[in-house]
Image (cartoon, rainbow, N blue to C red; front, side, top):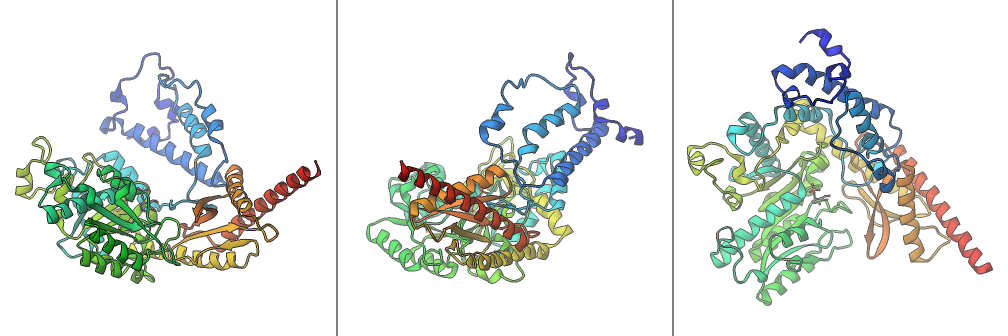
Length: 521
Ligand SMILES: Cc1ncc(COP(=O)(O)O)c(C=O)c1O
């Protein structure tokens, strides 16, 4: 490519008018179009950089109907004449009002800021567009993914009988876990293959035990698997928001006494709200005693696998039958990047189907690695490359230290919240979430606290200055910080807290003056 080509303005690469549509061949990523590729990537890079460098807030504060008004009357059959126009539209419809997770005042959901090597990997993997379902669509991509699976298995503490696969995230991994558990338990109990014959006559007896605080994908999976929400038994949490072990033991025993079948216990290593870690070794013992499959949902807590300081918090994970990991939560990876692991490779046969046109049995017999044999998906992104470039550039310790840093920030934040007279914090953090509420001393009505905290969250989002999450605990409304940004400091959190207090005080004084007005009428 000539050097002149790379400095041409984007619109010079595109025709001035689109009365006659350009053939697709002009846009296909290939040798002939590399100049356009370079130019478009550069323009994209500049666009993102200018947004990141000028963004002062994590969000614009736009409301759904305000943004939706920009979409009214858009004609998607119309193409623009210049790349400038195309990008201006992306700016207006998306970037101006995007939620920016890298901003230190974004403390809402389980979205981490992402590392640069992983973004580079996104460019490479999207450009080459490998699909890691079969060897003949991926080659080295399959081997890279398998190497990372083996590496992760080692971190979990599984041996070489174990295996796994990358997934779209925790929801898919948890579904896989319960699907494998269902197949295994039905084989053990009734010598029945669900994969082959569908649900057995006694399928209504199957039960899944999980903390009342586990992720809703457990209930969703139970429904998808034909067992229904009723099959998922919610076990109460203890004072530390971990699954209560005596309640679990009682529930398991009760289900046996009633002739039910304990299919699985889903433990959580990092609950979504409290970051609490269920007692894994004791759950493993109970699973063994009752013949139940043990699954550990470490979607959030998986950062501990590489933590220099806190790895021991998930000791016992190696006793699980299966594990969920979300690199896109605590390994600073772009969405999607998750994985599912099982202790015994043969269990993955529950999702294997050999199609003559894609992954014939003969290929498995020859030793061809077709990852589709262990995945729910067929066409699948090469997300593993993101983790590969991250590990090869930064190393696992850097990731673990990043996670340790947010755990430390959560502890500092806890002390800060404790020192605030108008803030009630209801737990000591284990990972990096904090659940608390604004609770003005002079008010004592629970329903007003609820209103105030909902109001604070909305007002912050509307201002765009900070984004915090909300949740309910025992029917009452709370605010939640999820801290996943290793570059954020306690002063960033102090600034967010100041906004919360300001909004809270304003809200209370509003309610107060309204109440006075009513009493004067
Ligand atoms: C504990 C836990 N498990 C599973 C999930 C689902 O993960 P994903 O959103 O990647 O499907 C979440 C999401 O927040 C989670 O917190």
